[in-house]
Image: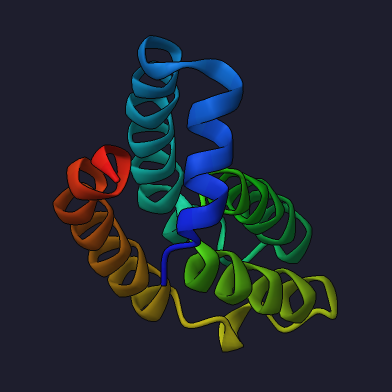
Length: 111
C-alpha cells in the first residue's frame, strides 16, 4: 500500500520541513483532483490526463497501490473506455492509503 523506502528517500532528500510541506500539498491536491473526476468522466482524454497526474503524485509520495490503480485507469480511459474506470475504488484506495500513511508515518520516520 505504502512504499516506505520511497518515503524515507524523499524525507532524506528534502529534509523534514520541506517533507511536511510536500505531504500537505500532496494530500490537498490529490483530494481535490479525486473530487473532480466525476465531472470529466465522459471525456476520455481529460480523465486519462488527470489519472496520469494522480499516478505520478501517488508514486512520488509512495502511495503504490493508488499509483497502480491510476495507471490502469489511465490506460483504460485513453483506450476510450472511461466508464470502465472504477472511481469508487480509487477513492477507497486513497482513503485507506492516506489513513495508513498518516497512522504509520511517525513510527517510520523515527526508525
